[in-house]
Length: 253
Length: 71
Image (tube, rainbow over all chains, first blue to last red; front, side, top):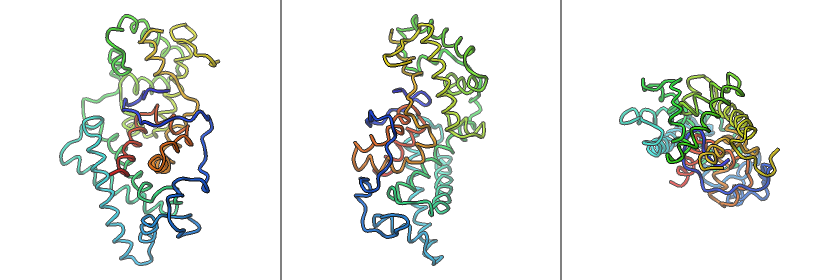
C-alpha cells in the first residue's frame, strides 16, 4: 500500500523489507545498542551517557535534583512542541498566534507528566530523549485533533464526493473514467460495508476529517479508526475487483 | 487499468504486513533511532514501515520525531 489514504502527508524515504515478518530487536546486534556507552543499570540495559544522566536525575532521591531535572526536561519538551507545531502549521493545523503557544505549553506539560510516570518502563531501547520526544509529538497530534472542532465550519456528514478525486490525486483529465469508478465505489460503500465501517469510511475518506479529530469526537483511539478504514478499504477493493473495475494482481486470491 | 483506476486501486490496496497505529507508535522511538543510526535498519520493522506508508497521522508523527532528533 503506497498511498497515505487518511491524511495525505508526504511519505518517508524508507525501504520495506521483503520479509513479511516484523523483525524483533536482537539486543546483541542492535545498532542502537552498539552506539551506547557503558552499562549503567543492568535491569534497564546499557544506556548512553546522556540517557543515563536523565534517568538518574529524574529518579534521584533528592527532590531538588528531581525538580531541577523536570524543569530542564520541560524546557526541552516545550522547544520540541513549538518546533513540531511550527512544522505542521499550514499543513494540518489552522492554529495560530497565542493559541499555538498555548497548545505547545499544554503538550509539553502533559508529555512531562507521561515521561515521569512511565520512567520505570524506559528500557533503554532508544536514546532517552527520543523516547521522551515521542510523548510530546503524540501530545501535539492529540491536541490538534481536539482543536479541529473549534472551527465551527467543520462538521461531519458533508459527504462531498466531488472532492475525493483531488484527495486521491486523480487528474481532472481522467474525469470520465473516474465518474464510472466513483459510481461503483459509492454502490460498494452502500452494499458491502457495515454501518460502522460506512460511518467511519465516509468521515475519514469522503468528509476528509483527520483521524485524530475523530478520535477526540468519538472518544476512541487512532488504531480503532485506522483498523476500521483498513478493513473497509479491503472489502471495497474486493468488490471492485470482483466487478471488473480494478485488476486482481498476480498472487492475489 | 486507466490512471483513475490505478489511483483508486493504490488507495484501496492494503498491506498485510501493516501493524496498525498502536504497535507502530509503541516502537516509534526505537524505529527512529535505528533509522538515524543506519537507514537499512528500518527493514527490520517491515510492518512499521508498511504502516507509516499507509497512515498519514502516524507518518506525520514519525516525521516529527525524526525532525526532533535531528534538531
